[in-house]
Image (cartoon, rainbow, N blue to C red; front, side, top):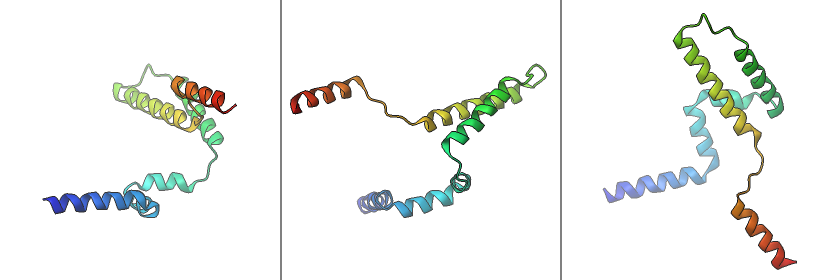
Length: 109
């Protein structure tokens, strides 16, 4: 049991440290992700497409839809909003990090 645990730990460590192996492994597991990676769309263009889809969903007439269709639309909207949040990027600093940066600048200057 101890040898098995050591083997699993060593395997996970090797896979996490070697980027090409982990990329190949994830590519073989998720073929949809590789299709998205192959299409080289800029983040701005992708954001425009996703925003257009959100507007299209908002303008839909949902009164004659079934509950299942409404649920699928709601899940799609949530997924699009989550993807938009991830693609926004940006640098977020906590209050503690800002205080530490200010203190370092005071000490240096």
